[in-house]
Image 1: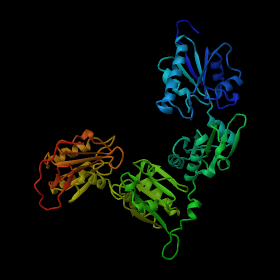
Image 2: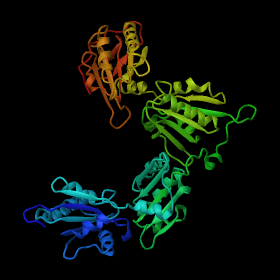
Image 3: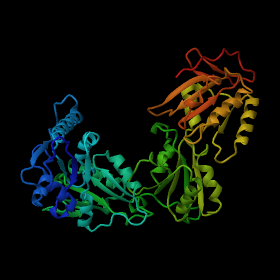
Image 4: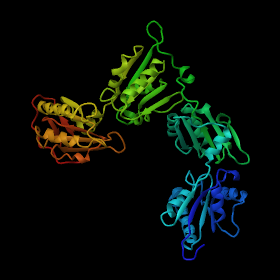
Length: 520
């Protein structure tokens, strides 16, 4: 301790339980501390302190500060509930440590496993690191000790490892388990029944290994199927290795869904290209729901794959938004191998979706029948929200110039304006493509009046949805993003007194009052 100087704050990982797994640096830093702090449960002693004590590294004469939780998983009468109680506890704990640091004492905060991996030390670090000199000494995390105890290689070569909290809702946990090669599920205890459910839905139950008290006395490792859910302590986790993936069929699904055959009874391959609709489950057709229940594999852009409920026997293949051709070929190859496969798109798969990408390559796979299942398109959803702006003739154009040149888009926009058609604009903007919507507006204004009705729908059908009725002259390109669809009316498009937008089906449109100013 140096008079007049502030102390140093260090978060030290002491490992998963075995004192022999503590690092040499951790032992050295703890031994030089003026103050040793540690968290403790509401009714238990600190496991982190026990590890340090058994390692013989606690310094004589050091001040010890126990930070005992006011609540763990129980109820609380705090006005802010559990979250409020814990937040107040962390603030008070940080204030206690800050007093020692202000007085010039070096404070070491012990943490089980690694300090910044699902540990309370990180919340002290958040509150103190910008005020005092701070260091973090890493420790062996519990999942590393558990992997060693189980003798289970978690990830090989390009395998993806995902660490998941067991506190996630079972459907979300199942989805993430199905999407990864290898997984670690932490925070078990009372969440274990839901974890079992998620493992089964993801088709990973038979691969899963349960490890309890890794590196500690009473260490236990068994297949998850053999675990009594009522006996699972907090110091337990589940491992799912990555080297057992690659199964193309699920016996459970094959037992109840017959292989498709042709008229002669010979095995036939089929690839479904499916439109999921714009977002809400209610806008997904019953035909699509039934079809997805019978496939082994779902292929698509990650946000669309995420919308397909996970179940046992379903393997998911999610990819980025700019690999349509690769995605289509992968799906066709899976189908040619005899798998039941669905390629999914948002909205309708035939409207700027995956149907074209699949059919462009389908002739190379003569054994595969491609069937396209329609979905509610984005233009239908936005139009219905607004009223009936596409009640008459209309055209649909994508403003993305990734697959076609801008001069072609411009010629089509001019032709549509000249033909007096309602115009729906897909892909009006993106993070890297912000100029097209402004250019399209200016181009249309060369032929159309500034008071032409415009509808902008954003995230229609979702919780964040918004609908704006404005005019072409007042359309603000800066307000348009990748979540929007824009509808530009024709001369027959009108706005009613109630704000509903509709387009006349008559050849000669009725008299139309000027459109209102922007409204959201």
